[in-house]
Length: 227
Image 1 (spheres, helix red, strand yellow):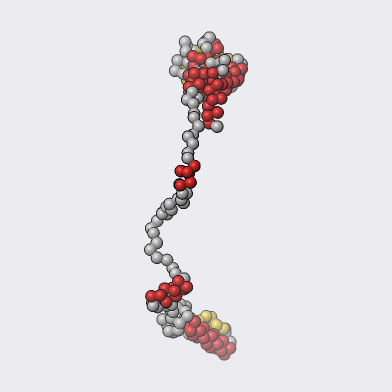
Image 2 (cartoon, one colour):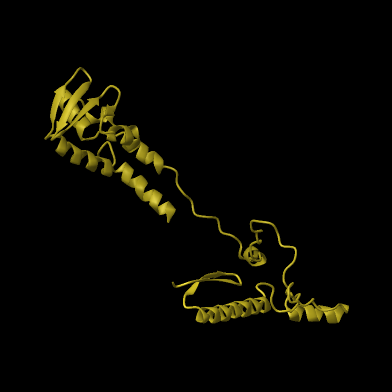
């Protein structure tokens, strides 16, 4: 298929009747149409001032520059350069890169592409398709992993080793009871019981006076007189 493409483009380049390819000739024709409506003023022998509507550009034919930047990038005259060339009476080919010419287009596809050589079928059968080699992932390699109880039991039967140790049971340092660490439920119960006793004592004292409770701090109760 690639050989057919090269042959077709090579024949098209030989049959061209224009100095440039069809695409370049089409672009230049459109730009020349818009260049006819622009106003051109000569600055010096090689510089021109081109006005198109509200935009103004300076074209330097000697250095090959235009303020729009298209001429420097494409190496092909833009609309402003074409207007300046028409005003100076210079042909377009003097300021168009040779890369777009018919000779360069033919040289691009001049080398023929031959079909691939046939490979013996016996050699194909002898070659065995193998999977690609696995690549090590990033990071440090793991030396061990968590094993299931089934794997541990099988290994213990074969080697006579004991099973994996059970997780440690933690106990509270206050009440020495297992199942919790902090906060201890027994200490919370004792603190709640002390607060209830203080509350009951304060309510009894408040009934014996005609005043009321002003507040308490810890186990002490302060009472004030109503009169």
